[in-house]
Amino acid sequence: MDRFKVYITRQIPQEGIDLLSRVADVDVNPEDAPLPHATLLEKAALYDGIIGLLTDRIDAEFMDAATQLKGYANYAVGFDNIDVAAATRRNLPVSNTPGVLTDATAECAWALIFAVSRRVVESDAVMRSGSWSGWGPLQFIGGDISGKTLGIVGAGRIGTATALMSRGFGMKVLYTSSSGRRNDILDSQLGASLVPFDTLLQEADFISIHAPLTEQTRHMFNAEAFAQMKQTAYVINTARGPVIKEDDLVAALQTGQIAGAGLDVFENEPNMAPGLASLDSVVVLPHIGSATKSSRTNMATLAASNLIAMLQGRQPETCLNP
Ligand code: DGY
Image 1: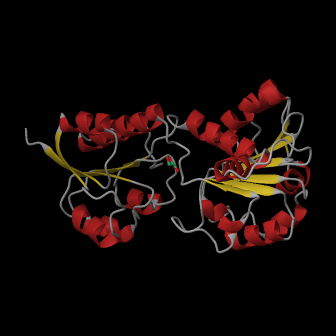
Image 2: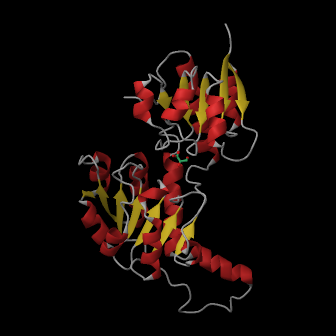
Image 3: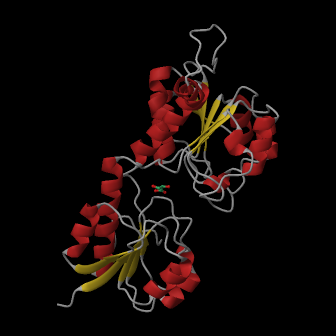
């Protein structure tokens, strides 16, 4: 039987490539940079299957070019880069990688909660600069975490894991739900409360964003939302950058409308809004939520096994088409 031809738009962990190589000849983008869209369109026409990243736009133009494509596997759980409806109309199966990066991303949210509230990055910078003069009662005073209220926006897999990790800190947990459905795990294990978005904004001390990027969530955190938050509250984002209107966040931080922000994702990656990087009340990370050895390896093998299924005409384990 002829071997399939597969293209991967950026180097991924070798385990995924090895798995694919059992059934396909695999080519990988040799550059350590996102593939230009024009190159992606050229590749679309030449391969039976593609594994791509959140930086690849899998839109109608891509699908029109992809005349022999049997399936597209996203190396990410988020899939706002894919026009799933267009893929479904063309009978093109598409998949993502849910479940294998849940804890890693939740841990990243907690890393940001600690770093921004306890001013870890600022303090580290002072130590490295050699300018620390010794212990002082008023130095680097931050916000408390234990006993505070955690607000989860988007209580799916990662939001739920983030909330469960608050158990060690005796926090009260509030959450929102776009479907209006209660989260049984959070209700039974944490006594959490499903609340309207406005209530969460007004009552939470830490708001952790885990909602997918959709037309409903784009710029959900804007000037009006920040105006409702406590001046002592922090916003944490490990989901997708455009859920926050970044210019409004900068203004809210500059005026002391909110206490701080911990961000792993940005509205226009790899750029940040002007003014953000000069604020001490912000901790910024280069989109590393899933960047643990096991998560990235499991993402690679899940994307590969999804693509193999699609090439062989089977339903992928984590299919996005309805
Ligand atoms: C995802 O999977 O959606 C993350 O943003 C990258 O791992």
